Length: 166
Image 1 (cartoon, rainbow, N blue to C red):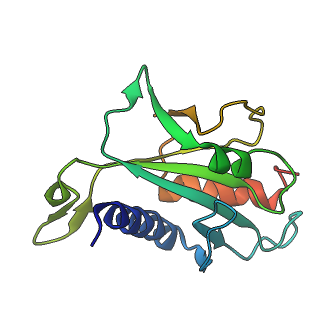
Image 2: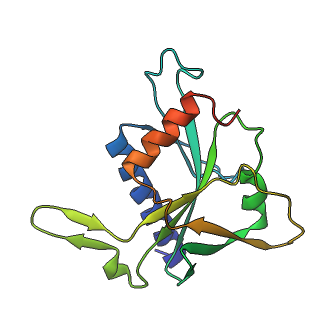
């Protein structure tokens, strides 16, 4: 498999494992023309503004050392930046950046009782991001304090059910 495709598939599996653990339903889109790689839905929010909320993600994966002063300085393609920013969406959109070891053998550890996926994934909302004149990429600061976990996904879904992005 092409190494870039391998990273994409690992990133997808990583985030989907978190969502499954959080009890969220995956929504796949066969075409990524809107910078959304995967979305998750939930139900059971009766009495909230949105009864069946959804959250959407653009997934990025890197083994480059992009960490500086508590943030990942991630070079995001301009198209993705523009597609993720703004408030005029029906669902909240997030960028998820997975940091992985450079060697494929370091991505997964198999043990007798479990497997472990390496390393961690972090998220950023570009909802309030400003337009840019950059033609190709814009470096976005993804805080290391915003680690994507099962609990984080549930909290994002809770906020979506309350219509926080509206």
